[in-house]
Amino acid sequence: MSDEKTFPKRHEKWLPSGFQEAVESMDIEEIKSKIYECQAHSYEIDKAKDADEKLQQAKELVKELSAPYSDAQKTETAKAKYCFFVLEGRGVNITPD
Picture 1 (cartoon, helix red, strand yellow):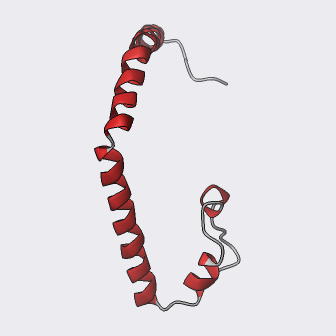
Picture 2 (cartoon, one colour):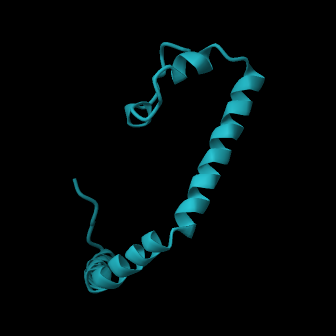
Picture 3 (spheres, rainbow, N blue to C red):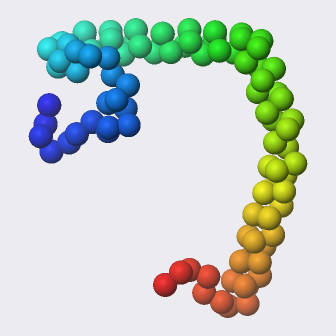
């Protein structure tokens, strides 16, 4: 691997022990096959997650309970953006220095 680029630490921490070395020793076709395998596993995980009724119920509950907060935040954001819009229309530079 090139010395000028490094793999992001936020992803590296999730790699199993020995994975990097194994991939480094693979040829291009083996790496492509590994990508397919990983994506297939990811697809299966997503399907299982979507089929998890308990998880879906929990998500709905969180969505329901957080709705007033989300709506209030969206309202405040829209109000601030409109104020910026009006200021900009009046010729005020809204870009921070």
